[in-house]
Image (cartoon, rainbow, N blue to C red; front, top):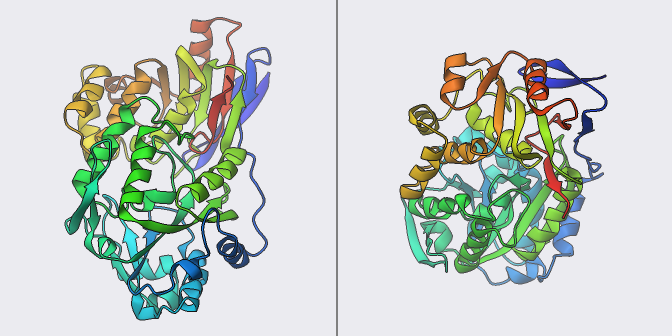
Length: 417
């Protein structure tokens, strides 16, 4: 018998699994933090991927925009920006020629204090910093998949665009980073929604770029908008920089994905009957809307008709307003999937994503939500992972296979061909 500790809310709980049933514990393989983060950024820019150096490309440009992540993302902008601006000044740009734009997508605007925290005191006092305005966008074209590319006016009017950010798995666009700083970062509501509809199409999944309609549409939008150069940080599970990639918005991004895969993509020979998955405790399991990522990742390790025992406290309940509304009014898991195809709504989209998992997998949920609510959203309430596991083992038989994912929000199981 193997006793395994798992994070749940602000503490831990345990589950005991018979040795004959336990087929593996899937953990990330962190790469070490770089010794000098600033030197790593400089080195990446001096050795750009499929691109000339930033100082060469930016020579003669007079309206330079740097796209920066908002406070909901762990991007170390305060580390990335000083070497970038140093290179721009080397190319002949003045501080007055440079604008930092916070890519908000559909999020709220950043306060001045938040902006300063994100970029650092020195940059904030030297460079103009502004929020993306979702209502002040101009159209610069349409992608081959029919997405109208409406870009925040100051970005559309720039003569040089640099995209920054961090890289991690994205539950439908493959990975964050690269041209995602542009779309959804600094686009209009209709652009974001048109692109996000693609998340329910085949190929839209974490850890996949080529053949992923959502990511390919994002990259095409970035090309249309003229993103010139990217600087992306790859972070380990402790949010420390392990690699910085710079250069061509697509080629450099793809190089960065290799480091994400090394740490977080775990190969499996076959899927399991049962997966016990923790989102990683508070705040990652603060509500079901946030816990969706762990459920999505865990679903790639489970056979059709199998079960996930998901540990997600959900102290704030379901979370996002529209997501809650759709989950509670649906009569079956098929309805949100049908609704999102008729009318895409941000927030509600995660109801459709969760329900695509529930259509093929039984989910036992360990949470603080009432049994009534859990049952209403097509899951099975249990008081502990042990209770859920015992029920699943009884259902699938004494020889059923079990996998454990202690940090399901970060780890992506990948079944070998």
